[in-house]
Image 1 (tube, rainbow, N blue to C red):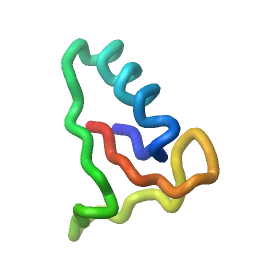
Image 2: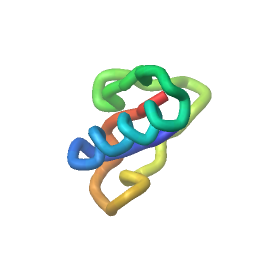
Image 3: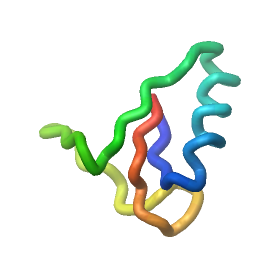
Image 4: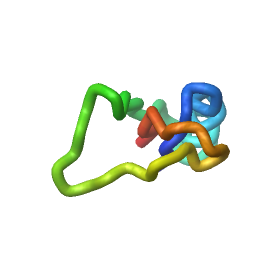
Length: 55
């Protein structure tokens, strides 16, 4: 699972495919909220807002 900004989305997808050998689901965190999980405040690779969840 990766939480990333738009700039790092492609890299996170590539890493997911390399590890699991299948395409991930990509969730736009500006459009979807989870009741039991609060996303990190920023991208795992930089200090921009974490906008996408790659699972």
